[in-house]
Structure formats: C-alpha cells, structure tokens
Image (cartoon, rainbow, N blue to C red; front, side, top):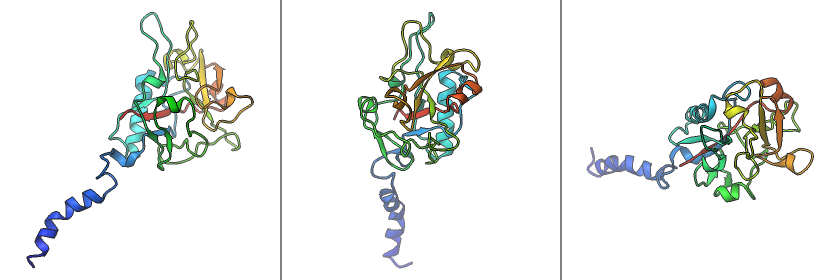
Length: 219
C-alpha cells in the first residue's frame, strides 16, 4: 500500500461521520421531533392510558428510524381524587419541533399554543404522509388531545379524556383539527376544536376521527 493511502483510510470513518447529517448537530435520527400517528394507539378513546399512548408514539418513531428520542403523546387528563391533572403542554419538552420533512412546527410551547405552523401540509405522520382532512373523501382530521386551547386539561369536574384515555365506550373526548378547518373559530383549532360525546370508534368516527394523536419528542 502506498504510504499516503493508509492515513486517509484510517481517517475516512471520522471524515464521513463529520459530514453526515448527525455529525455536527448531535441531533438523533435526522431531526424529526413531531408527527401525527399513522394509526390509532388503541380502540376508540381507550389508548391504554397516557403510558399506552406514549409507548405507541415510541414504537412508531422507532419504526420510522427516530427511536433515539424520547416521545410523548400530546394528551391531557383532568384531576381525579387519586391524581393531579396532567397537561399536554407540560409533557412534550421545550422544543423546537420539526416534522418528518424538516418543517419547523414551533420553537417552544408558547409558540406552539399561539402562532404555530401546524396545518394540513405540515401535520405529517411519522412516515411523512399527510393525514386526510376535510377536502378528502375520508376525513380523519379529528386528533385526540383532551386539552383546552392553552394545552391544559379541563377543570371543574369535566373530563374530555375518555376517562384518562381508558374508555372505548362512555365518556367525552376533546379533539383538535390538524387541518385547521371547520365552521367557526373553535373548529379551526389544532388542539381544541370540539367535544365528542362517546369514546367508541363509532362515536369518534362520526366526528371524523380515527383516534390518532400528536406525538412530540421531549429531547
């Protein structure tokens, strides 16, 4: 071997690592930190609780090559006699959040709950696909959140979380519209567009929801 070749061969792995998308920033998995689930975590409003929904986000992220991050479902649950309320905005880390193709959704929780960039074209699945909205034959724009517009749980004994995301029958669910479409200002909210009476797949389906959730990387 020519003496000039050996040093270059030894340094080649370091060179490739430095030039790779992961080399400079230290961000894992190419940067995706937000997605809408491509499939429901459970049956209707029964997602296996917050833990089950989080695990679903983690599984989908892993399958898409983004499993190096910690993922949480954007879901709130109200206070009960046994536990304090859980606010979706407090579960998802500091941001910023990027979708599967690198679009910035929001830089931090305040921006996410004010002037974010969420819409039909940016609220993509973990595979980078659009979720059908109101202009599609199969409208699936109702995303489960259980949250008020500020990203917090309901108060005053109201639920909105299908009994802590454990019911596929009775209960109520708050949905957001990922496409920001619907009659009236509230219906255009990405996280708090409407309240659905009933947590079965049929009840959610009548509200154009397939039981999908938003997933955010906390780091």
